[in-house]
Length: 225
Ligand code: NI
Ligand code: MN
Image 1 (cartoon, rainbow, N blue to C red):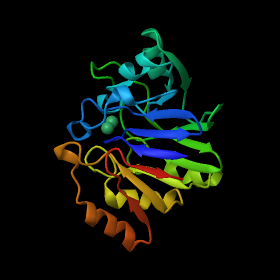
Image 2 (cartoon, rainbow, N blue to C red):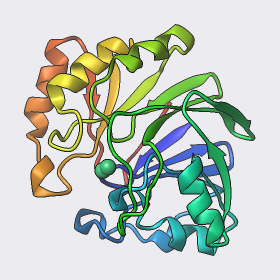
Image 3 (cartoon, rainbow, N blue to C red):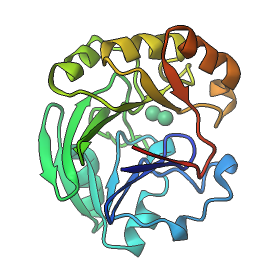
């Protein structure tokens, strides 16, 4: 499993020859100007919630290739009504896709499209594939529901928001890492806007002090699991 950071909360996940994009927001992110969305392949687009900083490039990417949009029921209905292919899920539900098992889990946040249209309830994803398990938290507060995750899944990596203001900040993400019983964290949802700028070295040190590893990737950089 190869995970690429495309800036903000956008990830590319490659599992064998299947390409998955999570929360595409590239053309609206000045920091990701080196990434050309025309180079991005997506057999699947996973959408955690409807906010524009997670959905801006869904249509542009889905239009170009045959893509299945996976999200909550309301978001998938929105895209199906526009002619796109989708797979609706809801909280607590899992589905075996060709690349692995996906579960849609709780997030504490809000979810509306840019025009105010209801975007269902926000979530995160657990992906189990190739004997590796990852948790993509989406935009969320620290929540006790995270304690449910390790009861069923031994995580190899968790992708947590750390930018504060709209989501968890560093201190809550450290507690989340305890709740989910995973000490290997990839941080996301930071630095894109003024509200969520962080000090990288300070953030890494605070995780390190709790015997945890916080990875912060450059935009376009990948990790292999
Ligand atoms: Ni959001
Ligand atoms: Mn967001």
